[in-house]
Amino acid sequence: MRRGCLSVGTVDCDICKCHIPYPERYVVVDEDDNGEEVVKGGKSVRYCVECAKKKGYAHYREIKGEMVLTFLRESDVSIPEPPSDKA
Ligand SMILES: [Zn+2]
Image (cartoon, rainbow, N blue to C red; front, top):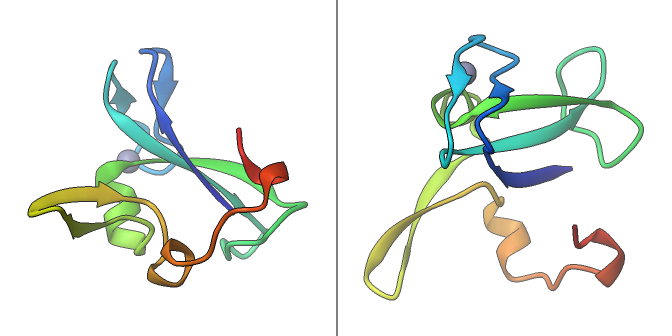
């Protein structure tokens, strides 16, 4: 699963190894050994926004007339999150 995060300035992208400065956003994705997203049990991989976009983990949605970067899948947006999934 994915967790959208805000860098506190001590985070590096696991893919391109770039530093993610505060207060840039990044996403942590649980992946298996093949790099496929899994719901749980995988390893946590950090993606900067650019790498997330390349892999399809991030996209822009229009919300109230503004383009907002989201790490959710289209299918996730309409589904309420179970309380246990909240950070
Ligand atoms: Zn990156």
